[in-house]
Each structure stands twice: as C-alpha cells, then as structure tokens.
Amino acid sequence: MADVPYRLAGKRIYVAGHRGMVGSAIVRRLARETCIVLRASRAELDLTSQAAVQGWFAEHRPDAVFLAAAKVGGILANDTMPADFLYENLMIEANIIDAAHRTGAEKLVFLGSSCIYPKFARQPIAESALLTGELEPTNEWYAIAKIAGIKLCQAYRKQHGADFISAMPTNLYGTGDNYDLATSHVLPALIRKVQEAKAARAPAITLWGSGTPLREFLHADDCADALVFLMQHYSGHEHINVGSGEEISIRDLALMIAQASGYEGSIELDPSKPDGTPRKLMDSSRLRAMGWKPQIGLEAGIERTLAEFMETAR
Image 1: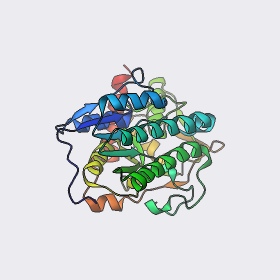
Image 2: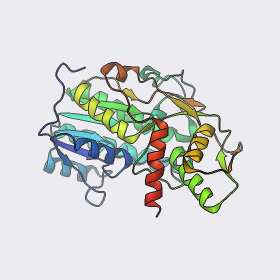
Image 3: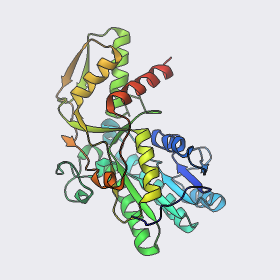
Image 4: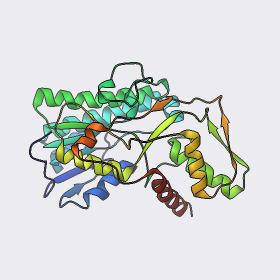
C-alpha cells in the first residue's frame, strides 16, 4: 500500500462508462471530492476505436482514470454473443490503458469481475485463485477479456512503472441497473419478474436452474466507495477483491425480493436451464484489512432498488 494516499483534490478524473451502473455510482461518489470529473458519451467517444481514444486523452489529459466501461450482461447474453463480449471488452480496456499511459495519467483503476475466477475455485475465493482452473463456460469470453485487463495493468506497471491497479467486484446491483430480461443479471431480472407477476396477479414465477447456487451481492454505491478508497490508498501489482462477504441462494434471493414487493405467488424452478457457477463468494479480507467495509445491507439495498425500479416503470 502506498505510504501517502493518492489525493483527488484538484485532479481531473475520467470516469469511463459514466452512464453505466457502476460508472454513475463513481460519479456520484466523486461529488464528495473536490475534483473535476471528466466524462464522454458513446456519441462523443467510441472506446473501441484506438485513434478516437488516443485523441480524446491527448486533448483532455486526465490525471486519473476509473475504467468502468464494459460490455456486460448475464448468462444468456454471454452465451449467445461471445465474440462481441470478448472483442469489445478487449478493445475498450486496451485503448484506455494505453492512452492513459501515453498521456501521463498518474493513476488508473481497472474494474474487473468475479467471473475471472475458476468455476470450482475454493471458497471464499482469494485473489491468488486467478488462473488456477477452468472458467465457467457460460461467461468465459467476458472473463478472459477481464483477465487480460488485469494483466495489461500489471504489464504497464512492470514495464513502465505505471500506477495502474485492478479491483474485482462481486455481483453488483443498484441505481441504474439493467432490467432487460434478455441481458440482465439475476437480481434485477428477479425484481422485474416479481413486479410483473405481481401486476398481472400471476400465481407463480419461474427461476432458471435449481435455485441452489449461492451468490454474493454488493450495492453499486458501496462498490464505487470501495473503488475511490482503492484509488486513494492502494498501489500494488495484485488485483483486489471487492465484496460484501455474505452469500444467499438464488431461491432465497427471489423470496426476499418477493417479500419486499408484496408478491404472494409461488417460486417455481426450471432445472432444465443452466445454473452457472454453483457458488461464488469472494474473499475480501485484504480490502477489509485496509480499513474499508460496505455500508448497504442486502435487504435495504433491495428495498431501495425496488423503489427505483417502480419509479422508472411509471
């Protein structure tokens, strides 16, 4: 860890992916700092274009970068669009990391994903589990791109002395999440399913798989706070896990959402559909030892997210 924290005051900070769930949470968190937040919409900047990214960085010259831009999606999206997930994420991270180095950025935080770890990694999953086993097949394309991003940050640190670090969050949810059933992750998908079933007075909702896989969830606002903390306090070669330290089965998650929604129908299972990784709990003890911990519990986070979904659905 750096002896002197990296100070954000007065710095020009680029949040790549500022309109996404995590990126927008980082922007909200940075409002508490006396810094200048730089952002560029997709219409303004194509992150998959090397020339465009190099030109933007040369013009704006950010002091620090949060690399939260990515093509993301759930099991169905990853399984049906593997080329898109691998190519676009490789291009985005390679272009931004290289441009940050070339234009003299002082620091960069690369945002990864817990899917980088082997499907059957020992639980809870420590940072050292990376590349010790086979990946989950349904999202290996996205995982390989994220692993490449970690290694790219490490390579620029080793070859050029760049202070580029990586953070691996667990499953995230919250403000600005994606509720499209074809491309969303499990928690927002369940919120939409439950709310639609409640509105239609449907007697039941159906979950993919057995309902037994265990998952860990972290609110995007907690994730953003952790990323800012790492930007300020961590400077090291190894990536850092960012998680809540708590896990819940998919079926119990559905029941929690149903209770918060006031939905009284039953929860049915479709075991013909894939489960994905059976268990995925991150070991975030290194981050906790640095002095950071989450503030938003799962029940409170679900209630907040449910209220936001209902507001946007009006």
